[in-house]
Amino acid sequence: MSDSFAPDLLADQHIVVTGGGTGLGRAMALRFADLGAAVTINGRRPDPLAETVRDIEAAGGAAEGIQCNVRDYEAVQAFFEEAEDRQGPVTRLVNNAAANFLAPTEDISPNGFDAIVQTNLYGSFYCTQACGQRWLERDAEGVVLSIATTYAETGSAYVVPSAMSKAGIVAMTRSLAAEWGSEGIRLNAVAPGPFPTEGAWDRLVPDDDLEQKMRERVPVRRFGEPEELATLASFLLSDLSAFMNGEVVTFDGGEALAAGGQFNTFTRMPRRQVKALMEQMRPE
Ligand SMILES: CCCCCCCCCCC/C=C/C(=O)SCCNC(=O)CCNC(=O)[C@H](O)C(C)(C)COP(=O)(O)OP(=O)(O)OC[C@H]1O[C@@H](n2cnc3c(N)ncnc32)[C@H](O)[C@@H]1OP(=O)(O)O
Ligand SMILES: NC(=O)C1=CN([C@@H]2O[C@H](COP(=O)(O)OP(=O)(O)OC[C@H]3O[C@@H](n4cnc5c(N)ncnc54)[C@H](OP(=O)(O)O)[C@@H]3O)[C@@H](O)[C@H]2O)C=CC1
Image (cartoon, rainbow, N blue to C red; front, side, top):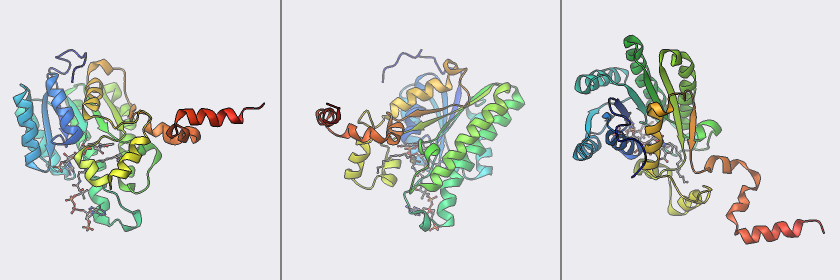
């Protein structure tokens, strides 16, 4: 994708992308490497990591993939040791790894709840703390970007553990923006709307009909493209956004806002029909 960033926008950065082997994490890792960063990605499965590293290297970038389950505190500690041994001090972190499934809340088992909350909330905390400890100790600046979701603000039916944990990530972002800002550490989040990745769609989109209805809910009438998110993330990790701290950037084609306005439903009718309806309501 062409954009107007300087080609060395992220040179001299070592960026960790959790869950960077697939979906949005992969798109971000590819773009960061293209903009000059050394990238380390993690995840539980080796194959997606190897494939993404191979693709980054084939494009001339620098990348390492290290297996890690972010639910496991000790594994996260070992991951950062290994990442820094391989590519030097980590300077940026993207908390992207996540777990989710659709389920009626009354049917979720303790293990199911843990699988989601430990991945999203605990995993993001473990990684953020590991980076913060290093940066504070070294008196180094740093940036954390966390991938939230629009329903972190509103809540959503049938994804309650995900909504709870993403809301916690937003709270962590805002809290640490205040606590660590004076030390040169910035934290922001992105709240994406729907982006058709295999990981999300396999678990969250029951059929084509619901997918089409979901598309119609988005004012711009399309889903996001992973490369668009990667562009925003590149800006947020770079010094171009140096004054931005504690923000949650909604990136959803207007979907969340449109869900809130009572009369937005008219936008799903032909405009001519809407105008006729409104015309007939005008006083004589
Ligand atoms: C209608 C159109 C909608 C359009 C969509 C728009 C998108 C909106 C925005 C969405 C915002 C957020 C999106 C995302 O986060 S997408 C990321 C999705 N990616 C992943 O989830 C990747 C990682 N996921 C996993 O690894 C697995 O899915 C899992 C979370 C299940 C964890 O796997 P693991 O192997 O660690 O664990 P188990 O398989 O052993 O399962 C653990 C317990 O969880 C229970 N479980 C699993 N699946 C379900 C289910 N579908 N319903 C209920 N319970 C489930 C499982 O039974 C285990 O519990 P028990 O041991 O008690 O049986
Ligand atoms: N796609 C969408 O519409 C939206 C996505 N998001 C967010 O975007 C991010 C990326 O999602 P997306 O790319 O769509 O989905 P993916 O399923 O492709 O990405 C999730 C990644 O996280 C990794 N992961 C899961 N559990 C763990 C774990 N315990 N330890 C380490 N890595 C783990 C997975 O790899 P592995 O299984 O190998 O561990 C996978 O690479 C997530 O934070 C998601 O909540 C937010 C809003 C909308």
